[in-house]
Length: 219
Image (cartoon, rainbow, N blue to C red; front, side):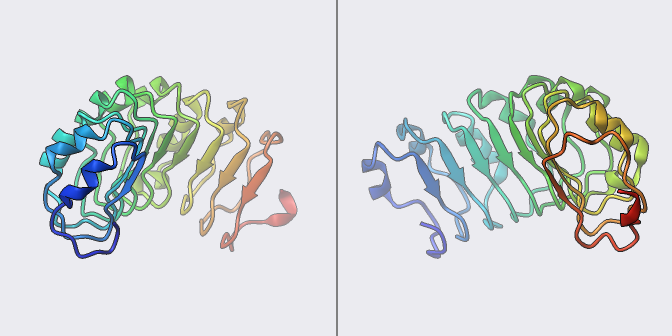
């Protein structure tokens, strides 16, 4: 149902009770119909480019769903709703290209996310408690102000089960990441890094395009 110029969810959608994925992106929907909770098998919900969406009302509905994946990208979102901890089945959350400035402590401590995409926001710090995200496997924090602070970046190395990390736009790449035993993928494209830390020998994938200041002879 994406790009249909919808202002509300059509009632006919609710007869598809086996629906597992619903894409409402690129519409003019301002509220989510509470009848969405009748879609008991819904696992993935996309609300990208829904700039008119009442986030507070939408989150009240979303927290009653059993979804495992949620996307609210490019939707003028000003904060990461801490109420999402009540989505107990939520595993993957994508909120890229918004105006989020922090990761709430409740999300860090109580969520069981395996994937978190916060690229292209305004996050200027990472909580010290980020080590509590023991289920997190994929993390995209690309192009956020926090990547300008090497001490803040070091906190990423405390996410012990991290496998895939994207830090595009970072100024530095901390050597502490080498302590992550499962880390196999790093992307640090279009970055200002001048050197690559030693110890990251277990990597299977390394994206460095656009790193014009990097001395590739020292890799």
